[in-house]
Image (tube, rainbow, N blue to C red; front, side, top):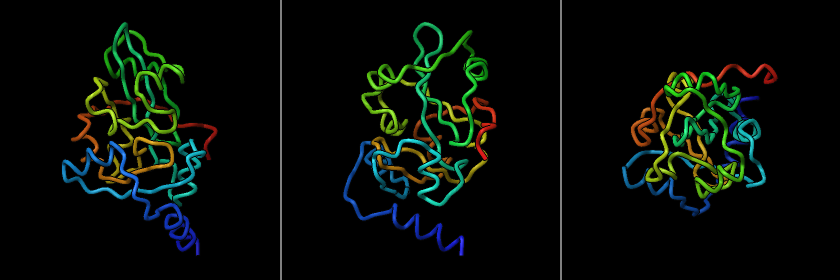
Amino acid sequence: MAKHAAQSKRQAAKTSKTIKTNAMRALDARHIAYEAFFYDEAIHSADEVARLLGVPASQVFKTLVVLAGADRRLLVVTPGDRELDLRLVAKGVGAKEAHMAPQKEAERLTGLKVGGISPLALLDKRFEVFLDAPGAELTQLYINGGQRGVNLRLAVADLIAVTQARVIEATRADESAG
């Protein structure tokens, strides 16, 4: 019964919308398979998206804009059920320190709204992309499609290849998740 409910939720989120984001165009141009899921753009959190899609939050990834050192702009892709650890990020990227970009700065740097930031939509924007280690253990994951209300499911190997992401330890388990 639970499996059927999850399939129903996933089907409800997957519609025949004809929206094509820059992230989708980038994948199409490289002949990379993906599946698009659409939902109300008022939904911003990975936990909410996971519930809607009927999948664990550990499979729905969020993209965080992090600044390291004086001039490094990072996109750190992390599971929805984990919390970013900036000390781990700094260590993983070889920087003395790292900090989250405030919302307005993240939106200014990416040209995308928070809740719609995706490394797939920013391939030519001079960001360094990092995938949190738990993601590298998956076969597929869900990631934002470059616009609020759009998530893409694709192979982790394809995400790494397209974005040239490097795998680092960037998170610790979110103790409030459960």
